[in-house]
Image (cartoon, rainbow, N blue to C red; front, side):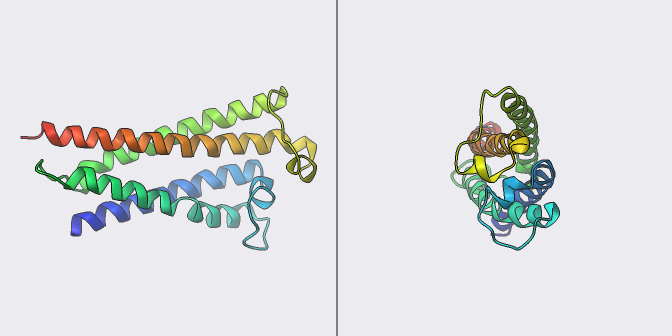
Length: 169
């Protein structure tokens, strides 16, 4: 049971840390992404406060899901059981790939919006100053990429852990 809790808690903590770092960057790129594009949970326009709040709220549950799935593929069945040290590297690698994809997608969103390939629609378009639309879309693309890469990557990580367990004698 100790190994199960270690894996799940580590997954949750890593997801929260990633989410806070990600949100610290995107909140400084476009605070409106959090103040207008998200429900108002606190009376603040501080990028740091918003990043801490949303970085936690938006990621703890993702870490929980990933942690449970990793526990299942690393501990259940007849294959040798893996512990935290056996699964931490794939977890960290996934976060690194997510960060790269978020960065690339944020840059893409920025330039695509600047070149009017994408644009904000109502009601957001009139709520956010027009000169900041491209920043909002950049943050949105970065967030979308993180979630998409995280969910797809979770499947890949789980498959690779399961396969590695079968290779251990």
